[in-house]
Length: 215
Ligand code: SAM
Image (cartoon, rainbow, N blue to C red; front, side, top):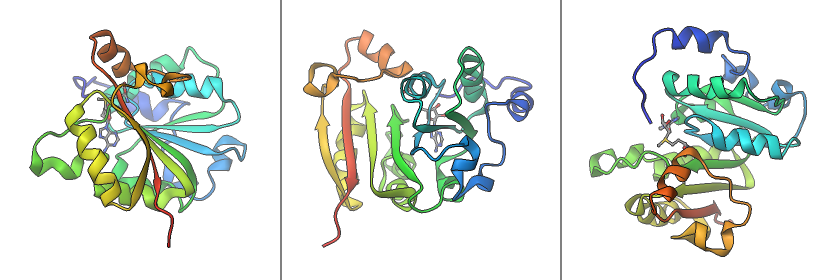
């Protein structure tokens, strides 16, 4: 998602009480940011933040971090966040490439990737958030039994991910090509893109991956 640049968005983000401006200062001590030592769960590319705000409201004992790279998009999330009272959710403006500067090894319990940009051209494959390059980043911040949960409507990206994730040394523990009509539908929280695409009749794909156990 890339919205037209909104003049003043950087300034509004810099002043927002919902955004951590210098997240690297919490590397290794995110409990200080939250004032509690609950598990840290992140969404990379949260867009306007519907999904992570719903999760944070439903699970007050879990500490959530929503990460979005574009100011104009993050600003929309901040505007929605104003209507909520959540003490277990921070937003960051950051590129997923910098996650290891923000979280220490083993600090993150779960990573959500929802409707990530597909980057269909082969020469852009490294930019896909399920590429081996990004899986190596997640490997460095996830705790040993931590997981990556990925949803998309894009069949090509999903099929690519079913190959790229095991190739990077991970097990795909579950996958479905039609989440909403599968046994995994129970408890599913829809993202903005998911609501839009499923209303258009598109099936939603989902997988959960964990690292392969060392032999
Ligand atoms: N997750 C939301 C949803 O499902 O409704 C938004 C999906 S949107 C297609 C993908 C989002 O990921 C965009 O807002 C984009 O700016 C963000 N994004 C893409 N690459 C990113 C990266 N490397 N780091 C952080 N955010 C990224």
